Length: 112
Length: 329
Image (cartoon, rainbow over all chains, first blue to last red; front, side):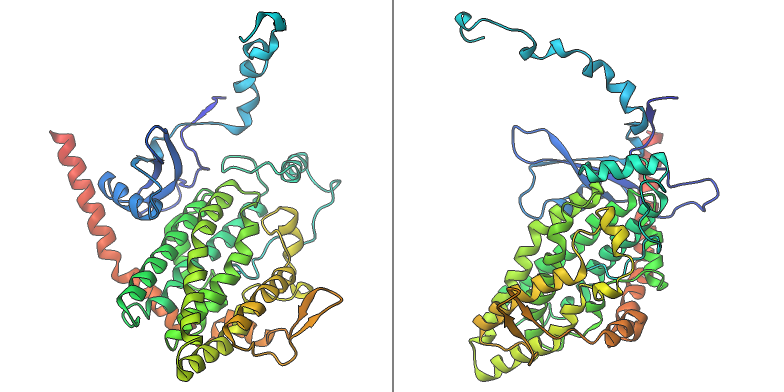
Protein backbone atom coordinates (compact mmCIF):
# COMPACT_ATOMS: atom_id res chain seq x y z
CA UNK A 1 0.00 0.00 0.00
CA UNK A 2 1.35 3.39 -0.93
CA UNK A 3 1.91 5.95 1.80
CA UNK A 4 0.97 8.74 -0.58
CA UNK A 5 -2.57 9.65 -1.43
CA UNK A 6 -3.60 11.87 -4.33
CA UNK A 7 -5.79 14.01 -2.10
CA UNK A 8 -5.88 15.79 1.24
CA UNK A 9 -9.58 14.97 1.67
CA UNK A 10 -11.69 11.83 1.56
CA UNK A 11 -12.76 10.83 -1.94
CA UNK A 12 -15.85 12.74 -2.80
CA UNK A 13 -16.26 11.99 -6.46
CA UNK A 14 -17.28 8.49 -7.38
CA UNK A 15 -17.80 7.27 -10.91
CA UNK A 16 -21.53 6.93 -10.38
CA UNK A 17 -22.13 10.55 -9.47
CA UNK A 18 -22.86 12.98 -12.26
CA UNK A 19 -20.02 15.28 -13.20
CA UNK A 20 -19.78 18.29 -10.91
CA UNK A 21 -20.54 21.64 -12.40
CA UNK A 22 -19.20 23.59 -9.48
CA UNK A 23 -16.01 25.66 -9.63
CA UNK A 24 -12.86 23.73 -8.68
CA UNK A 25 -11.66 23.79 -5.08
CA UNK A 26 -8.45 25.72 -4.30
CA UNK A 27 -6.26 25.57 -1.22
CA UNK A 28 -5.14 28.98 0.03
CA UNK A 29 -1.80 29.75 1.66
CA UNK A 30 -1.04 33.14 3.17
CA UNK A 31 2.18 34.80 4.29
CA UNK A 32 1.13 36.62 7.42
CA UNK A 33 4.03 39.04 7.53
CA UNK A 34 7.39 39.53 5.92
CA UNK A 35 9.91 36.93 7.03
CA UNK A 36 7.32 34.22 7.67
CA UNK A 37 6.50 31.29 5.38
CA UNK A 38 3.11 30.86 3.73
CA UNK A 39 0.64 28.95 5.87
CA UNK A 40 -2.48 27.02 4.87
CA UNK A 41 -5.60 28.95 5.91
CA UNK A 42 -8.43 27.08 4.18
CA UNK A 43 -9.98 26.52 0.81
CA UNK A 44 -12.46 28.13 -1.56
CA UNK A 45 -14.04 27.65 -4.96
CA UNK A 46 -13.00 29.66 -8.01
CA UNK A 47 -13.15 29.16 -11.79
CA UNK A 48 -9.46 29.97 -12.32
CA UNK A 49 -6.26 31.06 -10.56
CA UNK A 50 -6.91 34.75 -10.95
CA UNK A 51 -10.34 34.52 -9.33
CA UNK A 52 -8.98 32.18 -6.65
CA UNK A 53 -6.52 34.86 -5.58
CA UNK A 54 -9.15 37.59 -5.68
CA UNK A 55 -11.61 35.49 -3.67
CA UNK A 56 -8.86 34.56 -1.22
CA UNK A 57 -8.23 38.24 -0.59
CA UNK A 58 -11.90 38.78 0.28
CA UNK A 59 -12.39 35.57 2.25
CA UNK A 60 -9.12 35.26 4.15
CA UNK A 61 -7.54 38.72 4.42
CA UNK A 62 -10.24 41.16 5.49
CA UNK A 63 -8.16 42.29 8.50
CA UNK A 64 -4.55 42.68 7.36
CA UNK A 65 -3.88 38.96 7.73
CA UNK A 66 -1.51 38.76 4.83
CA UNK A 67 1.14 40.24 2.58
CA UNK A 68 1.16 37.44 0.01
CA UNK A 69 -1.24 34.73 -1.19
CA UNK A 70 -0.62 31.37 -2.85
CA UNK A 71 -3.45 29.39 -4.39
CA UNK A 72 -3.18 25.82 -5.62
CA UNK A 73 -5.95 23.65 -6.95
CA UNK A 74 -6.83 21.04 -4.30
CA UNK A 75 -6.55 18.19 -6.81
CA UNK A 76 -2.82 18.93 -7.12
CA UNK A 77 -2.17 18.26 -3.44
CA UNK A 78 -0.52 14.95 -2.60
CA UNK A 79 -0.85 13.81 0.99
CA UNK A 80 0.38 11.18 3.40
CA UNK A 81 -2.10 8.50 4.43
CA UNK A 82 -3.03 8.71 8.14
CA UNK A 83 -3.09 4.93 8.62
CA UNK A 84 0.53 4.73 7.35
CA UNK A 85 1.66 7.35 9.84
CA UNK A 86 3.48 4.85 12.07
CA UNK A 87 5.89 3.28 9.55
CA UNK A 88 6.29 6.58 7.65
CA UNK A 89 7.55 8.58 10.58
CA UNK A 90 9.30 5.72 12.37
CA UNK A 91 12.78 6.78 11.20
CA UNK A 92 12.46 10.09 13.00
CA UNK A 93 11.18 8.52 16.20
CA UNK A 94 13.96 5.95 16.57
CA UNK A 95 16.94 8.31 16.39
CA UNK A 96 17.12 9.97 19.77
CA UNK A 97 20.77 10.90 19.10
CA UNK A 98 19.59 13.53 16.63
CA UNK A 99 18.56 15.64 19.62
CA UNK A 100 21.33 17.60 21.33
CA UNK A 101 20.14 16.53 24.79
CA UNK A 102 21.23 12.95 23.96
CA UNK A 103 24.85 13.88 24.71
CA UNK A 104 26.15 14.63 28.20
CA UNK A 105 28.69 17.42 28.00
CA UNK A 106 30.49 18.36 31.25
CA UNK A 107 29.66 21.82 32.65
CA UNK A 108 33.38 22.77 32.58
CA UNK A 109 33.26 22.79 28.78
CA UNK A 110 31.04 25.86 28.87
CA UNK A 111 28.39 26.93 26.39
CA UNK A 112 27.90 24.47 23.55
CA UNK B 1 -26.83 28.80 18.56
CA UNK B 2 -26.50 28.63 14.83
CA UNK B 3 -27.11 24.89 14.81
CA UNK B 4 -30.28 23.68 16.49
CA UNK B 5 -31.61 20.17 16.90
CA UNK B 6 -28.84 18.55 14.89
CA UNK B 7 -29.60 14.85 14.57
CA UNK B 8 -26.90 12.39 15.60
CA UNK B 9 -27.34 8.64 15.85
CA UNK B 10 -30.69 8.86 17.63
CA UNK B 11 -29.44 6.06 19.87
CA UNK B 12 -27.68 6.26 23.20
CA UNK B 13 -23.94 6.56 23.54
CA UNK B 14 -22.20 3.20 23.08
CA UNK B 15 -20.37 1.72 26.03
CA UNK B 16 -16.72 0.76 25.49
CA UNK B 17 -17.76 -2.89 25.33
CA UNK B 18 -20.20 -2.16 22.52
CA UNK B 19 -17.60 -0.29 20.48
CA UNK B 20 -15.51 -1.87 17.74
CA UNK B 21 -11.74 -1.61 18.02
CA UNK B 22 -11.70 1.34 15.60
CA UNK B 23 -14.43 3.11 17.55
CA UNK B 24 -12.57 2.63 20.82
CA UNK B 25 -9.35 4.05 19.36
CA UNK B 26 -11.35 6.96 17.94
CA UNK B 27 -13.03 7.73 21.26
CA UNK B 28 -9.64 7.54 23.02
CA UNK B 29 -8.27 10.19 20.66
CA UNK B 30 -11.23 12.45 21.38
CA UNK B 31 -10.94 11.92 25.13
CA UNK B 32 -7.25 12.84 24.89
CA UNK B 33 -8.19 16.06 23.00
CA UNK B 34 -6.42 14.92 19.84
CA UNK B 35 -8.05 16.60 16.85
CA UNK B 36 -9.64 14.43 14.17
CA UNK B 37 -8.49 15.39 10.67
CA UNK B 38 -10.24 14.80 7.31
CA UNK B 39 -8.49 11.59 6.29
CA UNK B 40 -8.49 10.00 9.76
CA UNK B 41 -10.80 7.08 10.43
CA UNK B 42 -14.10 8.21 11.93
CA UNK B 43 -17.46 6.53 12.62
CA UNK B 44 -19.88 7.17 9.76
CA UNK B 45 -22.37 8.73 12.19
CA UNK B 46 -19.74 11.18 13.44
CA UNK B 47 -19.14 12.26 9.86
CA UNK B 48 -22.85 12.58 9.09
CA UNK B 49 -23.64 14.48 12.28
CA UNK B 50 -20.80 16.90 11.58
CA UNK B 51 -21.97 17.48 8.01
CA UNK B 52 -25.44 18.30 9.35
CA UNK B 53 -24.11 20.57 12.09
CA UNK B 54 -21.45 22.43 10.10
CA UNK B 55 -23.79 22.65 7.11
CA UNK B 56 -26.60 24.10 9.21
CA UNK B 57 -24.14 26.52 10.76
CA UNK B 58 -22.88 27.61 7.32
CA UNK B 59 -26.43 28.03 5.98
CA UNK B 60 -27.26 30.19 9.02
CA UNK B 61 -24.37 32.53 8.27
CA UNK B 62 -25.52 32.90 4.67
CA UNK B 63 -29.26 33.27 5.35
CA UNK B 64 -28.34 35.54 8.28
CA UNK B 65 -27.13 38.12 5.78
CA UNK B 66 -30.69 38.69 4.55
CA UNK B 67 -32.31 40.40 7.56
CA UNK B 68 -29.31 42.74 7.84
CA UNK B 69 -28.75 43.24 4.13
CA UNK B 70 -32.24 44.69 4.13
CA UNK B 71 -30.89 47.72 6.02
CA UNK B 72 -27.65 48.43 4.14
CA UNK B 73 -29.38 50.90 1.82
CA UNK B 74 -31.41 52.34 4.70
CA UNK B 75 -28.65 52.89 7.28
CA UNK B 76 -28.97 56.31 8.93
CA UNK B 77 -25.45 57.54 8.11
CA UNK B 78 -22.72 56.74 5.60
CA UNK B 79 -20.51 55.48 8.44
CA UNK B 80 -23.23 53.13 9.72
CA UNK B 81 -23.76 51.91 6.16
CA UNK B 82 -20.07 51.10 5.71
CA UNK B 83 -19.89 49.32 9.07
CA UNK B 84 -22.98 47.24 8.31
CA UNK B 85 -21.64 46.40 4.87
CA UNK B 86 -18.39 45.15 6.44
CA UNK B 87 -20.33 43.09 8.97
CA UNK B 88 -22.54 41.46 6.36
CA UNK B 89 -19.43 40.70 4.28
CA UNK B 90 -17.96 38.98 7.35
CA UNK B 91 -21.08 36.80 7.57
CA UNK B 92 -20.50 35.68 3.98
CA UNK B 93 -16.89 34.90 4.93
CA UNK B 94 -18.03 32.88 7.95
CA UNK B 95 -20.37 30.89 5.75
CA UNK B 96 -17.48 30.15 3.39
CA UNK B 97 -15.08 29.04 6.17
CA UNK B 98 -17.77 26.63 7.36
CA UNK B 99 -18.71 25.30 3.92
CA UNK B 100 -15.04 24.57 3.32
CA UNK B 101 -14.86 22.70 6.67
CA UNK B 102 -17.94 20.64 5.69
CA UNK B 103 -16.40 19.85 2.30
CA UNK B 104 -13.41 18.18 3.97
CA UNK B 105 -15.94 15.51 5.08
CA UNK B 106 -16.67 14.51 1.50
CA UNK B 107 -19.75 16.53 0.58
CA UNK B 108 -19.91 19.02 -2.25
CA UNK B 109 -20.77 22.69 -1.89
CA UNK B 110 -23.51 22.44 -4.51
CA UNK B 111 -25.14 19.52 -2.70
CA UNK B 112 -25.17 21.50 0.53
CA UNK B 113 -26.76 24.49 -1.21
CA UNK B 114 -29.35 22.34 -2.92
CA UNK B 115 -30.20 20.59 0.35
CA UNK B 116 -30.82 23.99 1.91
CA UNK B 117 -33.05 25.12 -0.94
CA UNK B 118 -35.05 21.89 -0.97
CA UNK B 119 -35.67 22.24 2.77
CA UNK B 120 -33.72 19.07 3.59
CA UNK B 121 -31.21 21.08 5.62
CA UNK B 122 -32.10 23.80 8.11
CA UNK B 123 -30.70 27.12 9.27
CA UNK B 124 -31.14 28.88 12.60
CA UNK B 125 -34.73 29.78 13.54
CA UNK B 126 -33.67 33.33 14.42
CA UNK B 127 -33.34 34.44 10.80
CA UNK B 128 -37.01 33.83 10.17
CA UNK B 129 -37.89 36.95 12.14
CA UNK B 130 -38.14 40.29 10.31
CA UNK B 131 -35.95 43.36 10.88
CA UNK B 132 -38.58 46.09 10.84
CA UNK B 133 -36.51 49.16 11.64
CA UNK B 134 -32.97 50.37 12.35
CA UNK B 135 -33.17 49.51 16.07
CA UNK B 136 -33.58 45.88 15.02
CA UNK B 137 -30.11 45.98 13.46
CA UNK B 138 -28.78 47.03 16.87
CA UNK B 139 -30.72 44.24 18.59
CA UNK B 140 -29.52 41.65 16.06
CA UNK B 141 -25.87 42.57 16.61
CA UNK B 142 -26.20 42.77 20.37
CA UNK B 143 -28.44 39.73 21.02
CA UNK B 144 -28.18 37.45 18.01
CA UNK B 145 -24.43 37.79 17.55
CA UNK B 146 -24.09 37.73 21.34
CA UNK B 147 -25.91 34.39 21.51
CA UNK B 148 -23.85 33.10 18.58
CA UNK B 149 -20.59 34.00 20.35
CA UNK B 150 -21.78 32.24 23.50
CA UNK B 151 -22.13 29.10 21.46
CA UNK B 152 -19.11 29.47 19.21
CA UNK B 153 -16.43 30.20 21.78
CA UNK B 154 -16.55 26.67 23.28
CA UNK B 155 -16.78 25.19 19.77
CA UNK B 156 -13.24 26.40 19.11
CA UNK B 157 -12.26 23.31 21.12
CA UNK B 158 -14.41 20.93 19.08
CA UNK B 159 -12.85 17.59 18.11
CA UNK B 160 -12.92 18.03 14.33
CA UNK B 161 -9.82 19.98 13.21
CA UNK B 162 -11.23 21.92 10.22
CA UNK B 163 -14.37 22.90 12.19
CA UNK B 164 -12.30 24.03 15.16
CA UNK B 165 -10.05 26.15 12.93
CA UNK B 166 -13.06 27.75 11.24
CA UNK B 167 -14.55 28.57 14.64
CA UNK B 168 -11.29 30.19 15.79
CA UNK B 169 -11.33 32.50 12.76
CA UNK B 170 -15.01 33.28 13.23
CA UNK B 171 -14.70 34.07 16.94
CA UNK B 172 -11.92 36.55 16.23
CA UNK B 173 -14.33 38.48 14.02
CA UNK B 174 -17.63 38.12 15.93
CA UNK B 175 -16.73 40.49 18.71
CA UNK B 176 -16.83 43.40 16.25
CA UNK B 177 -20.36 42.34 15.31
CA UNK B 178 -21.72 42.32 18.82
CA UNK B 179 -20.07 45.61 19.71
CA UNK B 180 -21.41 47.39 16.64
CA UNK B 181 -24.89 46.20 17.63
CA UNK B 182 -24.54 47.38 21.20
CA UNK B 183 -23.20 50.70 19.94
CA UNK B 184 -26.39 51.20 17.89
CA UNK B 185 -28.47 50.29 20.95
CA UNK B 186 -26.56 52.79 23.12
CA UNK B 187 -27.12 55.59 20.60
CA UNK B 188 -30.83 54.88 20.42
CA UNK B 189 -31.37 54.22 24.13
CA UNK B 190 -29.67 57.52 24.94
CA UNK B 191 -31.44 59.36 22.11
CA UNK B 192 -34.89 60.93 21.87
CA UNK B 193 -37.86 59.29 23.68
CA UNK B 194 -38.99 57.98 20.30
CA UNK B 195 -35.57 56.38 19.64
CA UNK B 196 -35.58 54.84 23.09
CA UNK B 197 -39.05 53.42 22.44
CA UNK B 198 -37.73 51.84 19.23
CA UNK B 199 -34.80 50.29 21.11
CA UNK B 200 -37.15 48.83 23.73
CA UNK B 201 -39.48 47.52 21.03
CA UNK B 202 -36.56 45.79 19.27
CA UNK B 203 -35.45 44.16 22.54
CA UNK B 204 -39.05 43.07 23.19
CA UNK B 205 -39.29 41.33 19.84
CA UNK B 206 -35.79 39.77 19.74
CA UNK B 207 -35.45 38.58 23.35
CA UNK B 208 -37.30 35.25 23.17
CA UNK B 209 -36.22 34.37 19.61
CA UNK B 210 -32.62 34.92 20.81
CA UNK B 211 -33.16 32.53 23.74
CA UNK B 212 -34.47 29.97 21.25
CA UNK B 213 -31.18 30.10 19.35
CA UNK B 214 -29.65 27.71 21.90
CA UNK B 215 -32.14 25.01 20.94
CA UNK B 216 -34.74 23.16 22.98
CA UNK B 217 -34.45 22.56 26.70
CA UNK B 218 -32.01 19.81 27.70
CA UNK B 219 -34.84 17.50 28.69
CA UNK B 220 -36.13 17.61 25.09
CA UNK B 221 -32.72 17.49 23.47
CA UNK B 222 -32.37 13.89 22.38
CA UNK B 223 -29.17 14.14 20.38
CA UNK B 224 -26.97 15.94 22.86
CA UNK B 225 -25.37 13.01 24.68
CA UNK B 226 -23.68 11.48 21.62
CA UNK B 227 -22.58 14.88 20.28
CA UNK B 228 -21.09 15.76 23.64
CA UNK B 229 -19.23 12.43 23.85
CA UNK B 230 -17.77 13.22 20.42
CA UNK B 231 -17.00 16.79 21.47
CA UNK B 232 -18.87 18.35 18.60
CA UNK B 233 -21.06 19.94 21.23
CA UNK B 234 -19.31 21.22 24.35
CA UNK B 235 -22.07 22.63 26.58
CA UNK B 236 -25.75 21.78 26.91
CA UNK B 237 -28.39 24.10 25.48
CA UNK B 238 -29.61 25.16 28.92
CA UNK B 239 -26.10 25.90 30.20
CA UNK B 240 -25.44 28.26 27.31
CA UNK B 241 -28.85 29.88 27.53
CA UNK B 242 -28.30 30.59 31.25
CA UNK B 243 -24.89 32.06 30.54
CA UNK B 244 -26.38 34.30 27.87
CA UNK B 245 -29.13 35.58 30.18
CA UNK B 246 -26.63 36.23 33.00
CA UNK B 247 -24.42 38.22 30.66
CA UNK B 248 -27.17 40.14 28.87
CA UNK B 249 -29.32 41.37 31.78
CA UNK B 250 -26.71 43.85 33.10
CA UNK B 251 -26.13 45.06 29.53
CA UNK B 252 -29.85 45.84 29.20
CA UNK B 253 -29.78 47.58 32.57
CA UNK B 254 -26.94 49.80 31.38
CA UNK B 255 -29.04 50.78 28.38
CA UNK B 256 -31.98 51.57 30.67
CA UNK B 257 -34.12 49.03 28.80
CA UNK B 258 -36.16 46.30 30.42
CA UNK B 259 -36.08 42.61 29.50
CA UNK B 260 -39.62 41.58 28.49
CA UNK B 261 -39.91 39.00 31.26
CA UNK B 262 -41.83 39.97 34.43
CA UNK B 263 -40.50 36.87 36.21
CA UNK B 264 -36.84 37.64 35.61
CA UNK B 265 -35.16 37.70 39.03
CA UNK B 266 -31.68 37.32 40.43
CA UNK B 267 -31.41 34.07 42.36
CA UNK B 268 -29.01 34.59 45.24
CA UNK B 269 -28.81 30.86 45.90
CA UNK B 270 -27.80 29.69 42.42
CA UNK B 271 -25.91 32.84 41.51
CA UNK B 272 -27.88 33.06 38.27
CA UNK B 273 -30.96 34.82 36.93
CA UNK B 274 -34.23 32.89 36.93
CA UNK B 275 -36.09 33.58 33.70
CA UNK B 276 -39.09 32.50 31.66
CA UNK B 277 -38.44 29.89 28.98
CA UNK B 278 -39.38 30.85 25.44
CA UNK B 279 -42.56 29.49 23.92
CA UNK B 280 -41.27 26.20 22.55
CA UNK B 281 -44.34 25.64 20.42
CA UNK B 282 -43.43 28.80 18.51
CA UNK B 283 -39.87 27.50 18.13
CA UNK B 284 -40.99 24.17 16.66
CA UNK B 285 -43.38 26.00 14.33
CA UNK B 286 -40.62 28.27 13.04
CA UNK B 287 -38.29 25.30 12.55
CA UNK B 288 -41.03 23.56 10.59
CA UNK B 289 -41.20 26.50 8.21
CA UNK B 290 -44.05 28.54 9.66
CA UNK B 291 -42.12 31.54 11.01
CA UNK B 292 -42.87 35.07 9.81
CA UNK B 293 -40.14 35.05 7.13
CA UNK B 294 -39.32 31.41 6.27
CA UNK B 295 -40.89 31.62 2.81
CA UNK B 296 -39.32 34.99 2.02
CA UNK B 297 -35.84 33.81 3.07
CA UNK B 298 -35.99 30.65 0.99
CA UNK B 299 -37.38 32.52 -2.00
CA UNK B 300 -34.51 35.00 -1.77
CA UNK B 301 -31.88 32.25 -1.56
CA UNK B 302 -33.46 30.30 -4.41
CA UNK B 303 -33.60 33.39 -6.61
CA UNK B 304 -29.95 34.22 -5.85
CA UNK B 305 -28.94 30.64 -6.69
CA UNK B 306 -30.89 30.57 -9.95
CA UNK B 307 -30.05 34.10 -11.05
CA UNK B 308 -26.39 33.40 -10.37
CA UNK B 309 -26.29 30.27 -12.48
CA UNK B 310 -25.28 32.03 -15.72
CA UNK B 311 -22.42 33.78 -13.88
CA UNK B 312 -21.12 30.51 -12.41
CA UNK B 313 -21.34 28.76 -15.76
CA UNK B 314 -20.03 31.72 -17.74
CA UNK B 315 -16.92 32.15 -15.61
CA UNK B 316 -16.21 28.42 -15.83
CA UNK B 317 -16.55 28.47 -19.63
CA UNK B 318 -14.21 31.46 -19.78
CA UNK B 319 -11.68 29.67 -17.55
CA UNK B 320 -11.77 26.57 -19.78
CA UNK B 321 -11.34 28.65 -22.93
CA UNK B 322 -8.37 30.49 -21.44
CA UNK B 323 -6.78 27.21 -20.31
CA UNK B 324 -7.21 25.72 -23.78
CA UNK B 325 -5.66 28.79 -25.38
CA UNK B 326 -2.67 28.64 -23.01
CA UNK B 327 -2.24 24.93 -23.76
CA UNK B 328 -2.27 25.58 -27.52
CA UNK B 329 0.48 28.22 -27.35
